[in-house]
Image 1: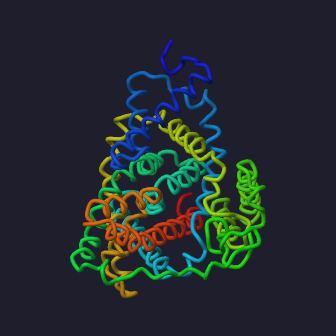
Image 2: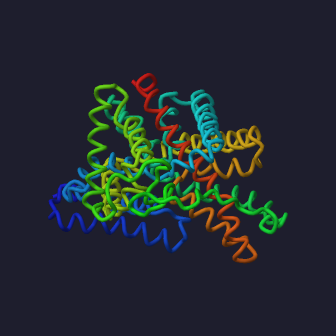
Image 3: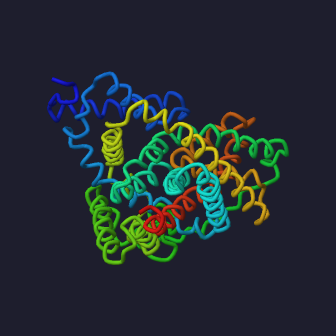
Length: 408
């Protein structure tokens, strides 16, 4: 009996899948995210199946099927990760992020399209400029739906590895900007402005423009004592189902509608911040999504990966150059330091929690005292988080609208 045909009990299959996910988490924590969890889990899984481990674990465990169902819920959670007031106050970095995405797309599709299929380069650019995993899974869904399965290798590899490549590059660029702040002793003269609204509270006692009441104007709809883990998950499931329905009847697709509903729901008080975290299911949801990726990797061989290594590296180079140059150009237009713009937009490669990890590590390693460390984090974080978050969402929105025209 062949290893791939071995039938395994669901519980054992779940244990094996979670073992790979846990290994990734442990290595990521041990190396301070130099080796991201997803990349470690993927490499370990590929080595295991190439060495003869059965490929049935993701299916038999039921996790891959759940990952397919829960991925839209994950996207809904991402759409509740930014305060509306932060979007307003950092609007310039939203535009900078969009400029960088356009530059990354142009570099990848135009230049890369001279050597490879422009459709494949478009799919790759949407992955590398759309926060990796999220953009990659949306692209893979489209490619499989149109029967272009021969193009899934590069987006799949990018979704699994872009974090590991992007974070070291982001660290180098962020160090450049942080070094300029340190050289000028900026923490002694440049005080961070407090944008609080004077402590205005909603009827539940939570401040407006806070994680408990993200809306600057409307009170949270659900009293805090009733927003249990189950209620929070129900909110995400309902908005996901609504997005599926509206996406179908409008032709826009569920992803673009879901992002818009997430933003809108946060502004009007329907959602609090980081809704997926409030369900206490984030770890399980991510494990299910990892299992979905494991399933997609089952038929991938080392020979296939080696055959795509050159276009993969070309995409990473072109999109990285586009994001950095676009960020520097946008920053220059709005009067910011170009290195701050580059630090903000290279975060499109790795998004959360990579953006925070990189900034925290750079501030910790370069600062001369605690006050300077806190200053560096507060000075760099808002622009980087907004540019990467909103830039990636712009990439996903634009990509979803253009995919039916380009990938068919």
